[in-house]
Image (tube, helix red, strand yellow):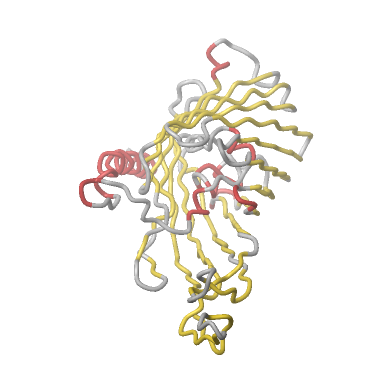
Length: 347
C-alpha cells in the first residue's frame, strides 16, 4: 500500500473519530443546557449568496475561494488558476456584512486562499446611567465594527480526498464604554450633565482555525464532507470569558440527475445535506437544491430546521463565461428579510 493511500485512510479514520467524539469535545454548560455563551456571532453568518440560498449546506460540495467560509477543502478543485469572490449581506437591524475571498492554484503543491470579512454595525447612541427623569445621559455616538482576515490552504491528496484549513485573526470593536463619571446637577438635585468622564475601549482580537475534508465516494458524483469552524481559545473583554461560535458539520452532496443519465452540460440538480452541531444552540439539519440549466442559469432553494425565525431561503444565479452573479433572499419572520449579493470571477 503506497504512502498516499495510507495517508488517505488515516484522514478518513480521523474524521470518523472526530464525528464520534465531537459532541463530547465541544464544551457545554452543566446539564448540557446551551446558554448562547459565544461571542463574535458574525462568524456564523453565511457570506456567499449561492451558499446562503442553499441554506449554507455546503460542507460536501466542490466550491471555490468562498469555500474558506464553509469548508476550506472545497477550494482544492478550482475552475481555473485563480478565483475571486466579492459580496455583501443586508443583515438584520441594518447591519451590513461584506466579504472578499481569493484563491490561486499552485499546481501539485495545492491551492492557497485569502479571505476577508467586515461587519458594520451602524451608529449607536452611547449612554450612561444617571439620576434624572430619563435614567441616563447621552455621552456621544459609537460605531461598532468587526472583521476577520485569514489565509487558507487546500490540496487534493488523491482523486478522492481533499483537505484544507484556515488560520484567521478575528477582531471586534464594540466602541468605548463610559466609566467613572461625575455629574453636574440642577436645582432639583438631578443630574443634567457630565463634568468629567473616563472611557475604556472594548476591543478584542483572537486567532481562530477552520479545517475540513471532502471525500469523493466514487458512486456517481456523490461526495461526503466534514468541517470544524471557529476553533479558538477563550476570549474576554472585561470579566466574563466566552468562545467563538464553534461548529462541527458533516454533509453529503450529489447531482441527482446522474442517476437518470441526464447530460451534465445541459442541466444538473445538485442536492446538498448538512448536519450541524454548534456550541450555542441545538443541532440543525440543512438541505439545499440547485438546478442549473445549460451552465448559465441557476435556481436555488434551501431549508434549515429547527429554526426560530427563518426556515427557507431562495436564490438565483447567472453565469457567463468566466463571470457569475448570485442573489439570495431569506425571509426572517418578525424581522426584515435578509438579502445577499455576490459576484465571482475566475481565470
